[in-house]
Image 1 (cartoon, one colour):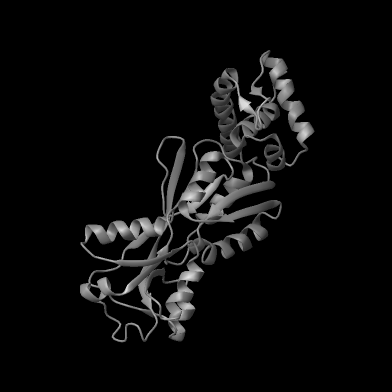
Image 2 (cartoon, one colour):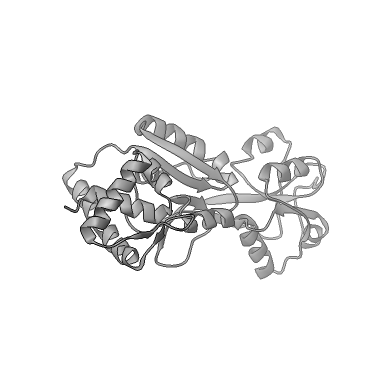
Length: 293
């Protein structure tokens, strides 16, 4: 007899391309998960996975069943929601954030999850937007928070907030606190390396507004960039909230430019379709109102 537990085991093994990771997400042993999938295959009288590869690969029948499985799980969640019978979530949720998010919103999210959903285990990855997008496409994470949306109907993006950025410098580098177009073109600009959503947006904004920038160094670490700025070796576009303490102490100065600096929208991006209970809990926490950044 076909059961929703079998469907759920199959769905997550297919979504994550891994029996072991699916078992971890569902808080069960890999052997128990494999048994449920085997029972489903026996019920449907066809193999759903090709197990000869390094990772389990869906067969043609498996790909056809996956769409139906997704709808069945979505209907189950609707029933739980409408009757108020949804159980407290438990298990693992893997997600990705950029360095800006890790230094601003993430601590509050972790505290709220520990308080409200103590049975959920968080597994965050911190990286640039391009790397997080690749992890999400590969099924390595369930959610990414980044200044980037992913195209296609298989992904859903919700804007969380717009983050305020400013060009920053050591006080002695820009004593007046004001940068003209010519001054901006002369000063060395430090930025995150390729794959950073922040750098892509800033470079596009500069091109549209006809600003010439002297890019001299790229690093994947926002902390490394800010340390170079503090040392007076260049200027950088940095998030105001992330560096509030440096600004308040006078170690960094937010400078005025020839145009208002761009604000950057940040998105919560997931795969379209039913998510796990731990993922839905994390989404609810992340979407709670926050102080404007």
